Image (cartoon, rainbow, N blue to C red; front, side, top):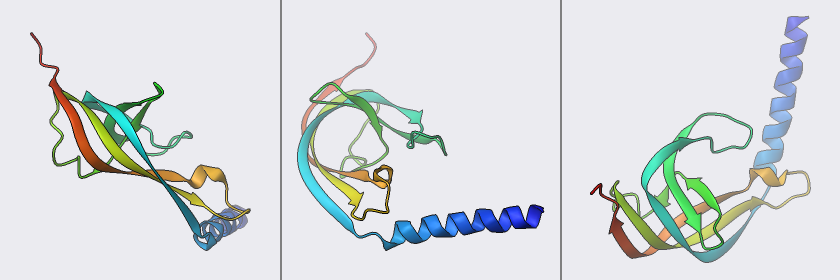
Length: 123
């Protein structure tokens, strides 16, 4: 009975993986200005749990607060204790097939420029 359960579970996983890797990807690129907090924190990158990641706490121009684990070109320049305003390219990668759920999409961030850097040092 347990073996049958395991085989059925593996079948579902294989079906999901085949759908995931059979999808072509459509990219869209936009430029955004983000405020990056002076600290990083642990967060769950997926809404339904999974492993924790450590990343930037950011706020976009519309006031939405979220986390980003990696900003290409910024990671090397970031210093904890400083708040940044940065301009980034945001490339949205999303599945382009009717069998793929939208939840599989993600954003990639690349630094364009550092607009400002302010010390949030304790007085």
